[in-house]
Image 1 (spheres, rainbow, N blue to C red):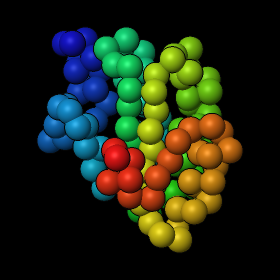
Image 2 (cartoon, rainbow, N blue to C red):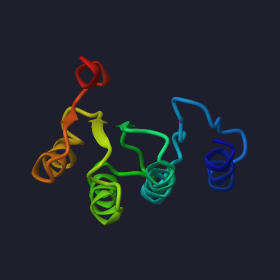
Image 3 (cartoon, one colour):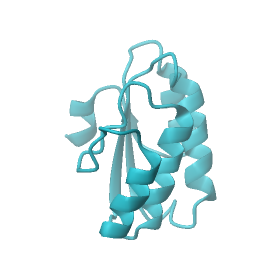
Image 4 (tube, one colour):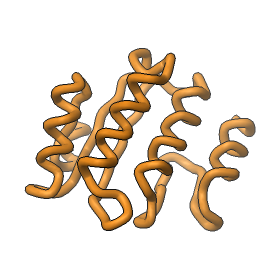
Length: 116
């Protein structure tokens, strides 16, 4: 909707597309992930969401995962939307994937594994 696109436009840096998929770019902090997640969950325009994360200096795997898990638990629609996660990184994301599993949120090591 125009309302959701406007909310994303206000949040995301200039030049970041607002389409599907939504690319948060390499400099996305854990807070940017959470802010976008809250907009998407609050829109009532989706019933499934797949989050793909590649670890970076500004978005460490485990910290990002923990903040997303907390945001999902706190959001009224957190349990109503099917959520799938892909935390890339053979070793750097193991703790993050374990945190998602313990929170009951499906997670995979590769994007291909997530969608098959």
